[in-house]
Length: 599
Image 1 (cartoon, rainbow, N blue to C red):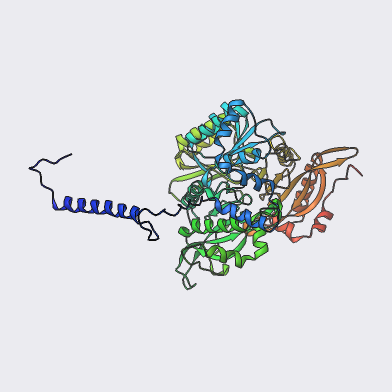
Image 2 (image 1 turned 90 degrees about the horizontal axis):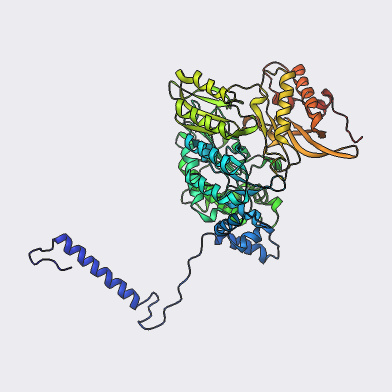
């Protein structure tokens, strides 16, 4: 468009126009004389196609193939096609009401969909809730999803997450899109991916916390979602942030655990709040995470976690699924080499500090996730709600959402203990909130047994489980509470298979599901372990008994706890301290061991 003759260009407009024309000439010249100095008319070199971000995985697979090794079936499936690109197939299966088959069962998990046949002819959908926190609106939405498309309930998991079960083949896409509308993205919630990022459930409200983990868990959550190369790892991967609060998050059982500490004057680094870094935790394989010696600032957590994951991507085992977790790479290399490899991928130097130069965190309150507790904000408290083995019917979820909105900030916080917390309640409204929670059939106080009862899904919903873990856990709790009065908290962990989703090795008493011989028959039963713990009580439990039929478990546990009450050194001695003070042979001699039914 021509300018009117009366309108002159300003000096700024002239400079802009001159710069624009110069830029056009530069672009024309670059086309006439391509990089490399070839004159116009000569053929330009072929454009190099940008490498996709997930090529890091193919290069890792190629190294194993070059060594003459065979990739695992799952690696072959990921190599054939990135499971993140299967949306069209998922939609097609939903339209036809079909479940996936073969390796597609594995690949569907990249979208949060787990086909759980033969336990149920259905999908389970696992969510992603960074730091285990969701709003009342989201909880109400999950209730709607569970009621419309699932079994009408959700389960709280041991990663402070939710699972919706009994989803029909035709409803998979409807579930995912409904969750997306709520701001909940299940992408990467299963298979070989970084699972839900956990953090202290009382983050931001705990009077004793050192660092608020919420922004870090959220930052890492979104970093993962937007980096395709951080999917399709050699095996699943867990990351947790412990801010030093009263409620634990089991960071020492994760592949990477960040544990908040304080550092005082004269330790060689500026005084302040830091995270110590642990790697290689996988208690189902009998190992806790190991301290790396690193002491890092909060802003360095996400870059360091990403660097460590990239090392795992490049060098983790792609041939043997049983040896594909990070622990085995660290075992093979040694801790020092692993840290050096991660450090080489960072734009900043890492600092080290002996653990003894850090101020110890305040102790974890063993069952602090249940009951009324004052917050750091004056006049406010949080209520820990007891959810028996983590199961929440849809109407209960709606009721809890209402309590959180009417009396608090509308915030619900899930815990790795399969319970939940409603925060930010004015002290004047606590009584009313507790009464409303009771009307929903839930408690805000717990016995020394029910407060630490943890159970995986069990064979009612998981094809790997040998036993009905949730049913047996509830039955044991009822039986013990009717017979014993414990004045110290005890954690009971029921897991149905060696995958150890309920982490039986870290319970005061742990139960591993098994099929047990009983004469000419086989019944559901457990191997029983004692003396496990985490944090300051870090220990792998020892096997007390094998092949105990489920019906005989209550009598055995009552005998174990009875021996503890009768022989502890004083009322202040915990069950953990008692069990570690005695050899496993001594404990066996104290208790009545059930007679084997196949004898």
